[in-house]
Image 1 (tube, rainbow, N blue to C red):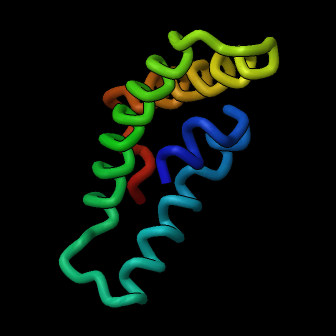
Image 2: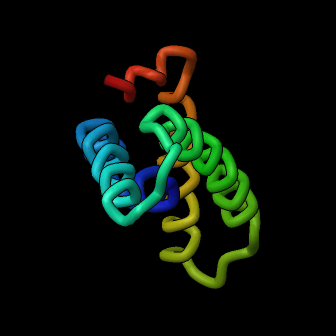
Length: 97
């Protein structure tokens, strides 16, 4: 979920749809039998996973890339992920209802 939202979506799209997508992900888990997993838990896990993805984005951006396109993709992913994590400041629990 974090990879999709934090690296694969444009920043404006993530900001616009993040809460809805995380909510639908949580709802799907509950419908399929996951118990004792609140929406707050899902948000926390999403935020932790965003930090893990950030580590991979930084590592990926630091690697030697064979061409300009690959370098651009790595930079865009890192920028999107940094922005997502920055958006998850103390007020980030605004994802919660």
